Image: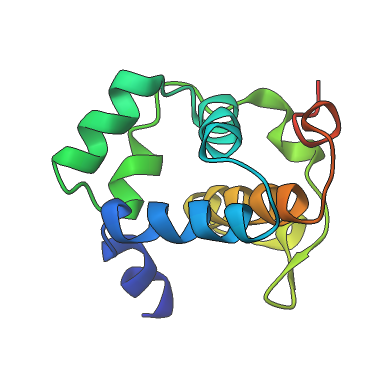
Length: 116
């Protein structure tokens, strides 16, 4: 049930929160976008279309053009849960994005964040 609530949240509500988290730590919206593009295969036009069309978060990830094959290299915890141990692939992909934005906010270089 908890996962369903996350999946139904609108990307247009979550995206600004991701950007705010990065900007509070002196990072940029462009860097958040670069992370999203790397992870999901969306380009700027695809992201903007998803935002304009009020796509929900689950659909945004489920319909991602090409989830990056190196996303399995993302390790660590988000909200006390290790991302590499999340059994449901859709939720795992969502948490991968959370983890990458966390790393950005912690000051990691883009080269380190975008694993390969």
